[in-house]
Image 1 (cartoon, rainbow, N blue to C red):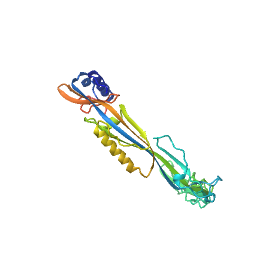
Image 2: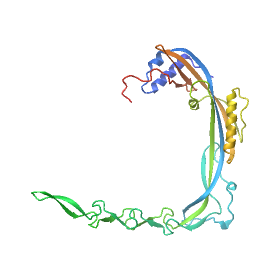
Image 3: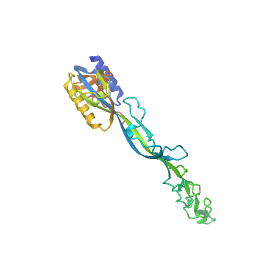
Length: 313
């Protein structure tokens, strides 16, 4: 694994401080290194690509399309229906009509009329005039030369009757049924839902105080990869905690997804370099980490995390 030299660790910290608002870079530029300890984090990843199927009733407006009814034969069971498999380890969902299950039925939402009562005017075709608040007249202020007084006049928006034509249904009192799209009939059938899911879990072995979740987001060296319809736990890796994590995850996937059809499994081990730098700045000792091939920095103890007088909150 690549070793991080003093100046490389300093440059990484300077860049990290510059990227953080309100962090000063003076400490990174002037610190003194006491020691840099190099180690490695091990990232084990297990992927299980499986398929599940379920059926449910579905409907769509009937506009004269062909109907594959039960008269054409018995409906097949879900797992006997042929579907096109997607690329491996990619989440995919498809919907497909089950053969020989379609029928034509009257629309249940509009009672086969194609229209429903307008919910805006409740079928009346008119709504209360908002300009006069349904009174048919509106108050106006007048002045006769000596005093101000209030008078009333017919509302010009509703013609004085307090109601206006409904804008939702154009005064008809009914709207198009969205279930059958005004056709009055539905094609009802059993819909097959096929879902391919890539189940991913990982196990991280890391000996320092670097948070494990940071290891997932950086690159490292891949030292092992295997892909089979069913993989076996790793047993011969030099780090026993990796073997233990592999055995635990493989067993967990076997039990958790036993109701799904297993297509493929793969697992891999990545080794991520970790450098723990111990340094001092103005008699203050702190530690930070440089990790991954990208040389990311984790420095929670950095002494200049706030620049005095900053106006940004």
